[in-house]
Length: 233
Ligand SMILES: [Zn+2]
Image (cartoon, rainbow, N blue to C red):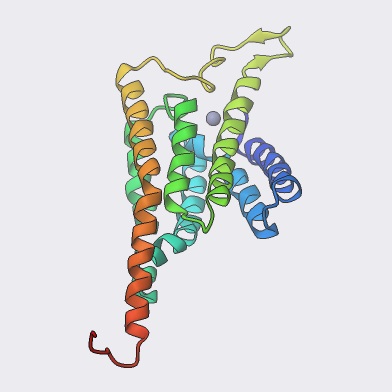
């Protein structure tokens, strides 16, 4: 199994390449490219949230809890929150991830279970899509795919590290337990695929919801910006 440092190194290298590709080939802004690269690097830690040994879980959850509220700023703004409410919402997100999220992973996941899987990688991308509304859809998809990519890099490295080269190219028992669509537990399979389906459903409807909220907020702002309400003619 690749250790924490190898995973970070791997996903960071791929993240830099992805950021460069976005800026050079997909006409993304430098900021979007750098952010996508960073998201890919951090996402390389996400699959090991299911590891019961403390370090990956602690480090990863701290990192995710710190950056998630910042990435959600556009979402908060779309909801029309004031700066104070944004700070409060950020705190709630932080606490939610640090305590509720971590507790969930400790209790309900097993290492190399269904959280190490392709539908889990896709779900992580959809969560990123849902928390980060962007001015354009292409930027939003580009950043969300960075998360999926980092996740997949981790899973691929886990598989590569399952090949025992020193022992004459032997496959270890862990081979095939990372880049998979289904695991051994029917319950875990159902949960992860249901999560993926639910997230996909929400993501597909999200565009309309965000547009509607934006329109409403804009209307309210225009109305409030008027010096005094004019009588209707
Ligand atoms: Zn792993």
